[in-house]
Length: 458
Image (cartoon, rainbow, N blue to C red; front, side, top):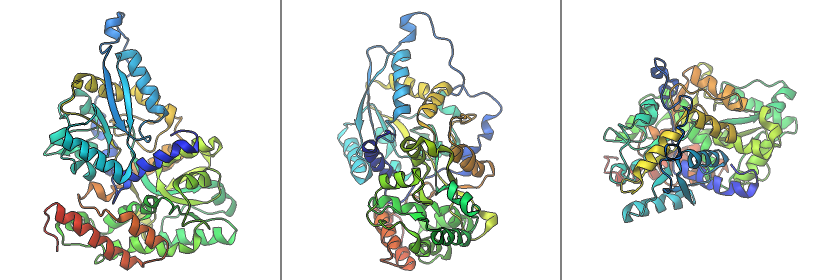
């Protein structure tokens, strides 16, 4: 992310696109990389020695690739990698910014329909991709060599009819509680493993004059993270919920564990920052980066931006999963990263494929992460986050992956998602509707999505 607040505005827009309506995720199995331990992955191998001739060094001299994506993708790490790609491959790049959110979704749908796609598009994986009918518009990457070392769970969320269409960005992310460790140390608090313990911590923080929970309703998409990030607890309690929800035989309003997710907004309403109804995503970044609030329900993609805002906070911010009601079943809801998609009709397909292979090479992943940071573990088998990654990601978040306590966000378990999710979560957060009312409204919102897909929903 850009180090200036102005540069964060478009980042917020792209993050809004990630959460538009519902959410997206990675599975616990997908992050283990067990299947990649027998052999060193080619795409994560060290850079081989370059050939001596200029022609060998720059096989795509004179080729320009057009890219479409948001500032979440077009950050300093990405810039460093494409500069190296120009040096080694000869490819030049022209970038076009995706405005993010619903507007960005509509733009790419329109461009798919009109045949006006760029050479490479950076876009969501999961159900938002499915809505684009990728086999009609994007190049099939299934048999490309560099995809052999990509995690199977990631492949599943960029596939249609068993064929793979996307190559991943470097890392996953989680929907969690980001917290200010000095406040916990000052008051002798421990990381909660139940929701009851979390609420108790908030009460102690408020009594001590702290702001227990940062809420940023000025950017309504941010209010979704508590609900969406609670999916681990919902699926732990109701393992068949996503399948039954897709089939129309389960609803949020009729499932106790699902209503519980919505009721959590009411439980913490007394602990918000004073400007909760107007505070923006950028305000939340500043507040958390400077210890002005203790907790924020947010995607871990925000952590590199917080560190850019205040480098001194790198060892002061931490991460823990949104707690449920059983301390033995405390785990993290995880989002798979977005992906690169190659225009099926591009005149530069070979150069695009060469860039994707280059992108997933270990030294280039290290360059990206050492420059920009990471929001979670990698989707590439055998790749280990470098020591430069902040402890909140490399230690706090990694422990859930190591313990096998991760579950995908709902977008990766069902194609059904409500377009008005952020409006409903904002109303619940501000106390305008109850948890039960929110659950019923969300079911009604999702019914529209199900009907559009021709699903048999009552």
